[in-house]
Length: 246
Image (cartoon, rainbow, N blue to C red; front, side, top):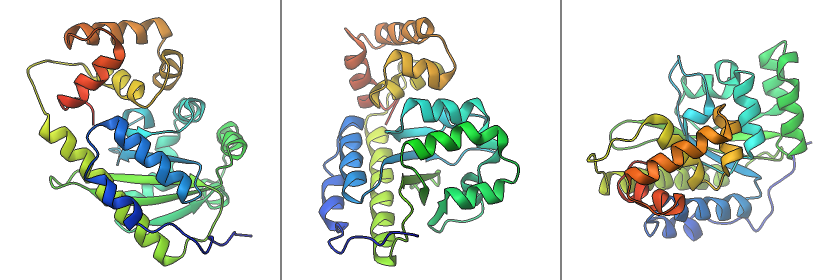
């Protein structure tokens, strides 16, 4: 049975007033973690709406605190091509909820996904709440909060949609303000920096991207030199200020 939301639900105004002050991806991660916890969710994911030929969730992720093993397992069984949530995102711009039971029913024969489903249950994730967003340039993305199975009241859905819109557009603004094309970073270097900014270790990034830990360290060392940074932490900060990651 779905659990009702607590009566003392957080109000969007308590959170959205902070968004304009966010200056870096680190600020956004901290903000999203607080919001996720305050609304009773387990994890969050902000990602672009993948193209039809996209193969991995890790390549679409913008900001997330999802455990590395979940992202790695998701990509290892090519779930992006079979995701009911991603399919719905391509059909609607209205927020929606998707329970684990619904996903299993709509996916039909999901034996190949059993391992991922088991991991979701272990992490207490039984429902995903999708909030489609877009920026001023029309780029489409979604903010997803995941956790227990709960029927979110309309007021909470509206508040979360407001938060999603403001957070995504603030991330876009951060990237636009500091954009600098004077240094050429490869897609892999940007991916490694982005996951480093999300708090992942080299080992975790290797699992997410399907690379060896040695290769991840090579990318991070190389990009640090490109950005004239003394270490990967400084490289992340410089990359965010220059708009390579947001």
